[in-house]
Length: 490
Image (cartoon, rainbow, N blue to C red; front, side, top):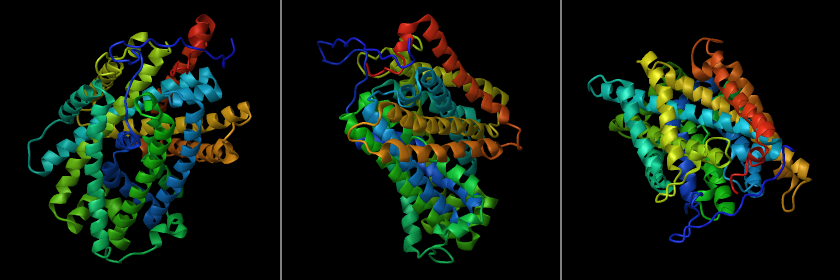
């Protein structure tokens, strides 16, 4: 049987009481709700306070230009991604698109890599939240508490919220996003109203020569890493209204929104410190933004920033948990994983079983890590960094899949050369280069000495190989199941 053999699933019956399809998710999210749902993934205030200083450390005063370039790059990725959502109207995202473009074997490998990468990201959210909570309590002379206590509380909250309909999570994420973006904008406006920092306003942060004085490759790596999340819009296809309009709007809107926010925040944070920005970022990156907002707005905003970083990571955990649950649900529908995962809650219309399994798997992963690293030292960086490499690899693979699909189908009416080939080709090249940089500078991504933690990459390799191996087994032993891979839309 050919790897691209199509499968036609029988139409689902409807519930006579509600008219809903029993085995399908449901929802009426608009572009705004979907955009905020995936934007929470990137935790904007955590990026502004935590990652932008690292970008300034490596990129110097020209780091802002790296965010401009990254926004353009990811808009190019979004062009191919959105074009594919129209041609492959399935909620599997990476899984569905790679299956369509590069075949079902590669598609299932991509699906397993996506699940593991998102699970690692979810674990990193809980660890980071726990560590930040203990630091905040200590900073106000509170009692010493273990990070895993707050991580456990967050895990329980996320598990409960994600069990219900997506609209419940969407409301929580919308409130969290508005609050954390408000903090970043408050700082930005304050810097503008105060006439900038000690050197006033300058065009230097947008200067190619200023960026060239730093490590351009590493700077771009950190800039690309903080945009993750928007690539999950297609996962929620069954839960939005008018998906052919909503998903493109939410995808482009998410990239542009965080792009503009990070460009402005990086520029104004650099401006706030003037010529001393690089030294401030290098000497104490964690305090760079909190100290600046305390000076330019009001002292209590320093502690408030740490509080909103915690709520930001909680929102990010909700967003990532929802993505993982839907990947498991889709794989269950295609019988690549047990059909048990494909059961939709009869009342909440959510992937309740897949959500519960997601929570249990994260707990199984974090428990031994917490027992062996009670201080949590470097654990969040390792989980985040490893997940980021996996997701960037998948984004590059999807861009290649877009080109392959349109090349095989000879293009499609209404789609031009730019959308089908140029934009995804540029994205594939840039994202592939970013993955190489991430591996070469893995010590900067996950911490540790050069070469010390490269063995962690085997986690990603094993997950992809497991997916490929299962697909080959299904192709030989269960051809009907194999034919249904990537057909989650039915």
